[in-house]
Length: 118
Image (tube, rainbow, N blue to C red):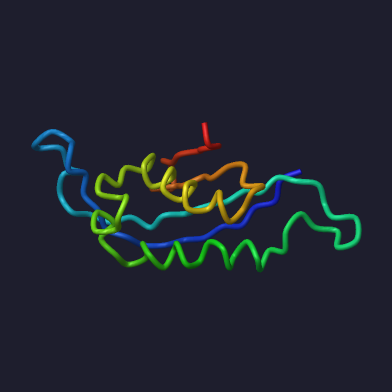
């Protein structure tokens, strides 16, 4: 069984390795939507896989590192493609959430990344 929690944050970035003339070479911003999934079996007594508050408390400090920031200035996000941002979140969250099973990051309403650690 999977549970999930959704978050939104706004951030600016530019992609330093795209060719000259590519519009993403310039500073621009997005409203990102992050969905974090945790897999497991509900605890027999508590009835949940993880307390949603515990899930939220694990993720919010990371959101604070990127929200209303230039992501290129965040260590590990010097080339902040949607793929690299998703991997960054995964690497930070996996030690905190052993049941982490998938992360979805939407950069626009129609564009995003799904990552399961592989």
